[in-house]
Image 1 (cartoon, chains in turn brown, green):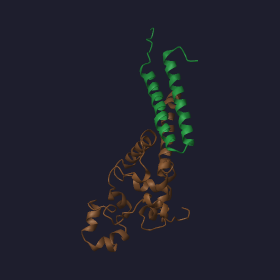
Image 2 (cartoon, rainbow over the protein chains, first blue to last red):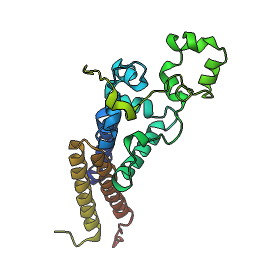
Image 3 (spheres, rainbow over the protein chains, first blue to last red):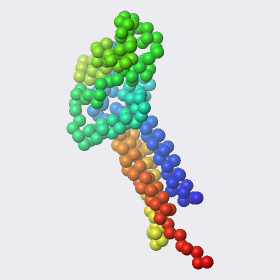
Length: 175
Length: 69
């Protein structure tokens, strides 16, 4: 019985608790920005311009500031968190063993899905009754069906404009 | 010093692997970068899995000596 506890139950428990702690830590903004290549993306969260989508979300706590990257870049479908972390493993592979692109040339693996925006915005008054959203009766259903992209349709197109950071003004506040 | 009995030796090896796994995981929990995460899941997980499988294998492969009666 002691051998079972020491060689089976305890290691599983330790691994489970450790994995849970590591996964929680891997969701943190600090963790995502710990790779040098991501630094401009971290800077873009502090751009002092409400037109910059990521910055406006980060600075106004529309996403938890300590999990800002993960909140928008996880996948809110089944096993989305696992998919996001597997994608992270790919990033690490490219960063250490491949040829990482310049920060401004980093692209998403697939087009950004409105589902990730709607996870928070669906049902919110500002989204459902916003003047622009309701001006065309076909727009809201198209957004909800991911037929019209919130981002690439041009309405909320400036997300992380890392190419023009050197001309940007930055918010100095703490978050 | 490892035991000469195959069953005990497997248990001892399993214990050593699991202790190494625990050490690796404890060290990784002190780190904060992606490398710590990879070592935690890769090396630590590997040592744990091998240690646990070796323990289970030692149980199913143990020979019961027949009773003399």
